[in-house]
Image (cartoon, rainbow, N blue to C red):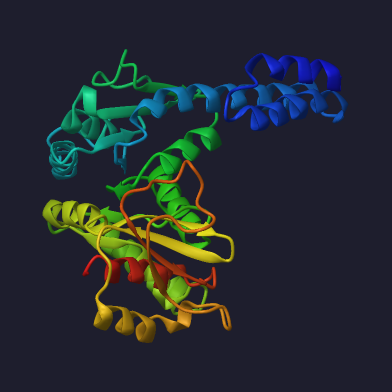
Length: 334
């Protein structure tokens, strides 16, 4: 089998990702000896196909910032939350962003309509009882229909640079808390998460109060974890929260034992000293401190962006993600 695999991958030996594809081929063949039934192999096959196709759809837009918009399929046209979803999505599209929705009715349709067909994606799911795509994305090349929730959720998170939640049911709460969990545990990069109530509404405010009372006050999450999201009833504030997150901050990643923040402008001497004082608690003991570098640092690869030019490097303790979110806010004041 090894010779056959090597002969196959040799057909595309010049591709930069051929080493990873070789591992995929070997892993696929190992399913034959894994002892699972046909259903287990079929599930892996479908999931792999969905990952491949969705990557193909999103890859031409890799350089474009995107926001995932979640909310109830039951909210009707003309509802205050519908109006807000259209307004928010239109303004994000005007700012050069694209919008990702679940492709269904309600808030999802409002998000697609606001952004427009050419500035939005529909990430649909096959359900036993429904979910045809809404008219705004039906037939669009940016429409993807998934069989599995877990592959669908991956693309909501992997492809988005922000998450905005409108009032919704179990699905909306599931999607929102999963995003927060991934940020809190460091399994995805920091992004802005906004919970947008209708004007004067208390849907998300009551959720925030519950999280504070049932989780924070009982020590089940850190007080700083409440900074991972923002609750507002203003579209203006929601837009500012998303766009402002990238005012100076660009992106981040782990580099060996350190954490790297890319930014357009470096801190001056006083700002750097204040950072060292105010955020010393998130550093790994004995690991060093905050360092500012111009250009790529060791550990960044050829796929990492050259611009922006400035880097903030520090030994992050990999636990204080609520505090890390506040550090991003600090970076955006420079």
